[in-house]
Image (cartoon, rainbow, N blue to C red; front, side, top):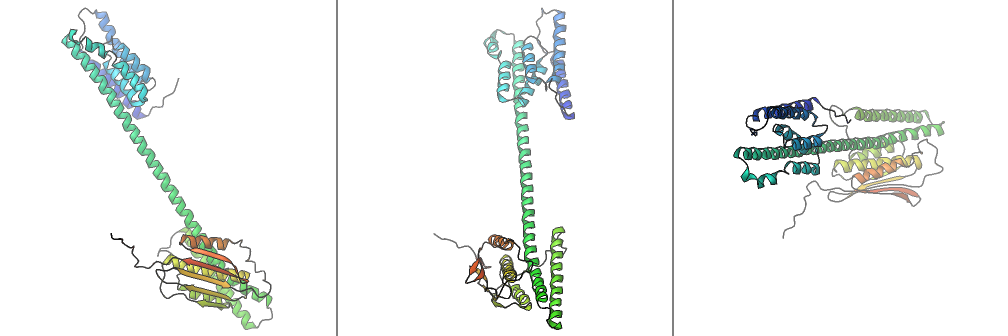
Length: 391
């Protein structure tokens, strides 16, 4: 036997419908027309059948269709099964498919043509009682269909809400993943730049042990300052990963900071020529991307072409694209192993993704024995407005 799980609300509904069927039978007992020649035993049996029909309402969830068929067929002879039959057809209409509901409804209204054909021959009381019976059955079927449509609507709305919640969770997870990727790019760019400076000065000390004491002290100071800056940048990144700072987001580099970046690289002994950047302030995304391009290119130049001359050119204007080009010459002599050259090209891959997100193009490759990194970034004017076509 199939086990039906009923909640407290389901039990309350079953009890309410049982009481409805019983009360309907009791209230309508005085108005049910019964033939005068019916024996008292038949009257008692009719009332017992009505009571059993009311009790059978409690089985409506387990066997709704058989219960409705039995009550409709028995109701043709028993006068007190109208209430239970109404509950049974309501249950079928509310819980069963359209085809099953249609068959049960057709069974309920099967006597209607015969009744209409013999309507003129029936006494007034029996005709009114029969019309009331069919009207009540039709009302029960209609209420059941309305209940099922409402439940389907609620289920559809619940499914939509669950899909919307799942979609919102996916978007939030995508945003978190993009934020982690952005932080990873920041860690690579910032820490790679600082550690490359540190590696250059440490390598100089390793290969020039006979340097004057003043140069050794200056190189050690630069190493200490670079290590302190790297730790500070790492602390900033960890702070962003844990929680946002109280005073807002941490400061991001701008286009004007390219000059400071090149000055720091020159302080380590690099031969760097700088042209630009423009005096006009660029949008935050454009300026930050240009800064990271120069930073990554200088880091790669220190890794793979130490001592070679580097040319940095940053040019452009509003309403036109910004051009960032970093070119280094052929390295002088063999490239020493600094321990930083095994990056696998991840820096350039991250740089290409950063430029793509900014809406620009990146070109990377060897040229004239050296290496060149060139990027074009969109630089929209602050007061640019879309053109309006009149016609």
